[in-house]
Length: 111
Image 1 (cartoon, helix red, strand yellow):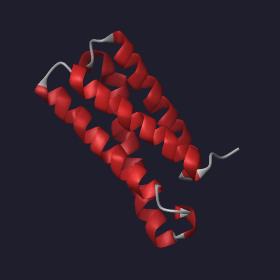
Image 2 (cartoon, helix red, strand yellow):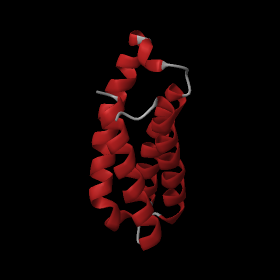
Image 3 (spheres, one colour):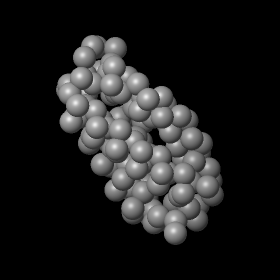
Image 4 (tube, helix red, strand yellow):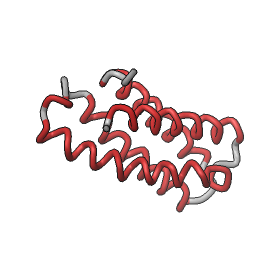
């Protein structure tokens, strides 16, 4: 079953908060910038998902879908490299889990 817009919103919002937490424990300024960039992109998606029934408005949904595709590629790359970016195991695990969930829900909602 496809997730609802609210469920996708909640998953991406959780990811945003997890990335914000990860920012504070990232090892280097470069890593912090990368995480902040990902968090900002996720926040843009959350903001768009706040709009009621985005799917029914094709002119707004299509650009959001394109943005999600780009962001999910970056999130997948960050997910595969998280151990070298975050050295706090608990935070790294949380980031990986939040990214996985967002990728799963995003893939189902933005088809």
